[in-house]
Amino acid sequence: MSLKIINTSDGSHTIYNSELNETYHSINGSIKESMHVYVEEGLNYFQKKAKKEVYKIFEVGFGTGLNFVLSYLFSEEKKLNIEYHSIEPYPLTDGIIKKLNYFNTELKEREIYLNSHSQKFNSKIIYSNFCSLRKEKETLEEIRINNSFDIIYFDAFAPSKQPSMWTLQNLNKIFTCMSDGSILVTYCSSGKFKRDLKEIGFNVEIIPGPIGKKEMVRATK
Image (tube, rainbow, N blue to C red):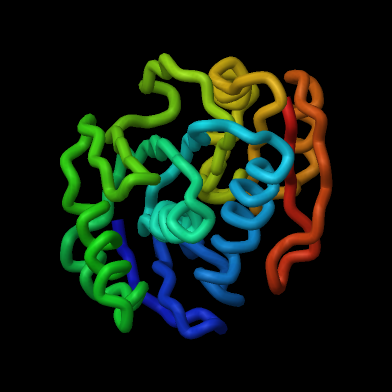
């Protein structure tokens, strides 16, 4: 896998995968995209409509770990208990991780970011009174999910680059591990993806996307 670190418009890094000709985040801003799609339209939206003791998040594609750290910071600010579960079959190397400029000026946040990558797979780590993380080095096809989640962060590469991730079978697997009223959020808004979600039984919303992208999807079970 040939990876290159590049700058995005908000000053934060992303990674370019030359094999897929695809970046891990929007070139219009990695942090801005993650905050908008996953934290604001996912976690923040859901916690406003559903008051729970614990919010269970499942992320498809841990990648750079940016979604996790931003969710951790949100949980600390709002004093929300979150259990974060993520899968990543192709983890980034230590060399790449340390070069990414996320949270460079904030010691605690930087430590959380680095630790989330060095954390062993298949183990639950408690990061604060409000946040825990469990990662598994498995594909969506391989993993056995024995949980009921409130929020799905679907952050795989685009369907045009990684179509196997967006199959009806995989989306249905996600649907079955979601609690009633739970949501899925993703930057993707392709026509086939939206039709597949509706076929499975989701209520699909088209909402404004992050900077540089007209729309994104939030789907409710």
